[in-house]
Length: 134
Image 1 (cartoon, rainbow, N blue to C red):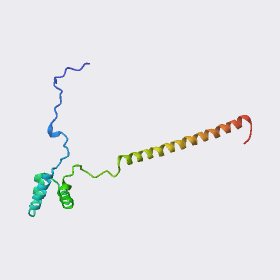
Image 2: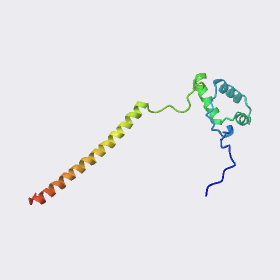
Image 3: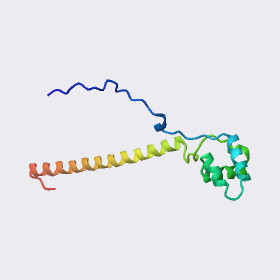
Image 4: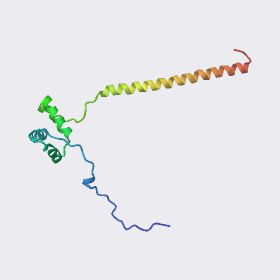
């Protein structure tokens, strides 16, 4: 039995900005310096309110303070988030090729063992057919 015609003519989906995926926040040097100054000026118990108002975590402020104390303004202006890569792309490629080489060597050993086994079976069958003893 055929389905009846649907009353829904508009099937277009419109995205809701509220539900869109959030992107990583990027903080400017001026913003970080302002927050550090405000945090240093806070009295006992006011720091939490500042962090909530600015929607920051305490570890962000701690990192910024540590970076500023260690290397000054230059440390706060870094743009790349996250730790540095421990291996260069060339080193990762070399490791990948070494793993592939080891895998192919194992495969070659298995193939050679199979060939050796086939040769032995062939020799045994040949001896049986010709009536010769080894």
